[in-house]
Image (tube, rainbow over all chains, first blue to last red; front, side, top):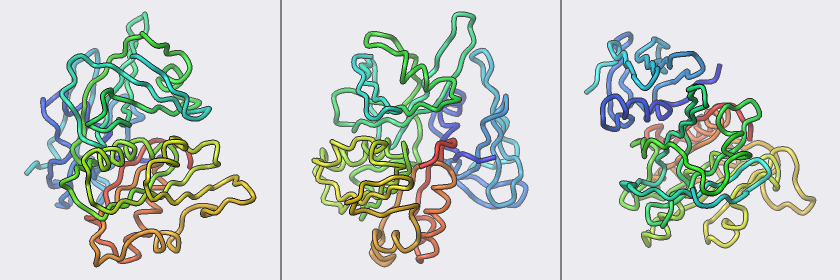
Length: 80
Length: 229
């Protein structure tokens, strides 16, 4: 399946954190590769959005939005 | 929402009037949310087609045949209807006059939309940065903003992938490394390249540029779902 860029979750991250995070950098906790969020691979066709590291394919972020509430799972992407 | 402009049979520009718009940067997008009577919601992200300097925010939407949101926006929406928007969002795929260049924009299909914001911002800000656009579309009839591009003063190179007029002067077929080598500046001139289009198009163009010796960090990409270009 074709992946989108991290730009695709800009709105969801903005709603959750109150700021734009797509230009924020971080490190994949699976393989250590650094990337900006906009550079990650986004798979948006599932009920939740799955974001993977482009280097190792590991899942780094999961975003679920339901009935106006969002949950963002960021444990495998170390911001900074 | 104040006005609809048919750009091609599949793409429509939606001119919106937003009472509390905080302003945006060229290349940013908004999320459009539709809510059905039973409460079911669908949301999609669309690039902003207008420059920060323009009086109204414009979205250009291409109808995807199996889409949940775009068929409504292209076929059902009427002037005066209200839309729920979230944004502007996105801080990565943006170009400000202060970002510099030379600036190469590479669009596949409706990937042209954020670039309209950029070339209009380029002109409105009086930028002296060299700007060139490479636009790949299926046929002349699918070229979005065709009239505007003709008079915009933008240096446009066009590639048509499926059909072309007999006298067509542009590139025939998909873009390739040879075409990109001809269109872009040499890596030592430090061009900034933005590529927007369907995933396969974006990856082919980005790989070709890196193959030509361009620094991957100077190439920004924005991929969207399958539509073909």
